[in-house]
Length: 223
Image (tube, rainbow, N blue to C red; front, side):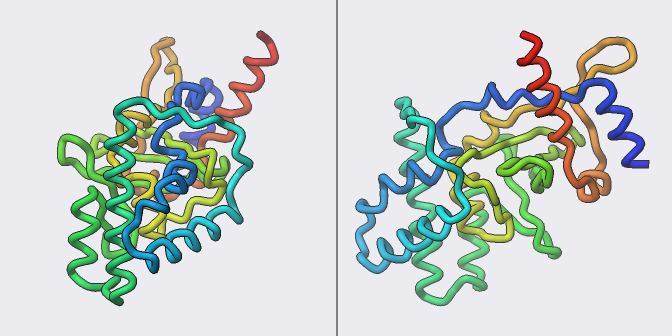
């Protein structure tokens, strides 16, 4: 049923225009690298630098010059604080303690009993998150109504949502909600609609953005 649904939608030009993505918080590696020297603890600097080095092994080439609008300063601070608090708990061996759960909640994250990550929206609602396995660095988000959105980072080609440090880097500053992009399609009457999936469909889908990227490239070639 799900495969038939997505096949039908793809035939109606499923769209997700990543060109609308801003270049601020999602490029977390560049921004956080600049903040390494701001950590007070030498041990934290070393641990954080090691984490970024490991991330660089799976990162795409840095080809975009970073732009820092005024509001990005506050985002940098919040993101840096989230990572610093995480590393402090990790250094104390408290990763599985209640204080660690509290840290997730403080920065709008939580995990279900099955380990799946959720992020908190500005309205206090919880969104499901998963990877789109067809496009490197792409994630799918589902709001409580079933609407599906996409989010992509060009820095991390392999996003590990089971790693809370990575999740804090991507979602810790809360900017994801402004940078998400609706996955849209045109229905039989010609109206544009946001793709809706129930929770079961959302969990089962492997990827829905590959067709979108191909459609965008074909459109660019025509133009």
